[in-house]
Length: 127
Image (cartoon, rainbow, N blue to C red):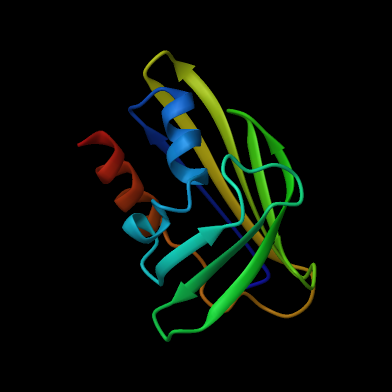
């Protein structure tokens, strides 16, 4: 699989969904393979570097290449091969549609997100 796109509706305001999903302190709560994530600055801006530790204790490094509050958040690995883009759309004041899109420029996705990952995010946010 070279690309993967999943959409979910979360019953929370768009600003809460954006803040939660871009905050590295929350990543391990909803992404199964990530045990810890750190950003060199928060809130992020273009060029902010993130690193995360997976369940095999490997560190992976990313940079923010696109960000617009409550609209879009895009990360790329430092080789500019793996990319992930979150887009946010307000359905109403308390409901947000979030699309998760990941792709590889070369090769295949090793651990593509599943609907279960976004369902976990939805469950945590709606508690």
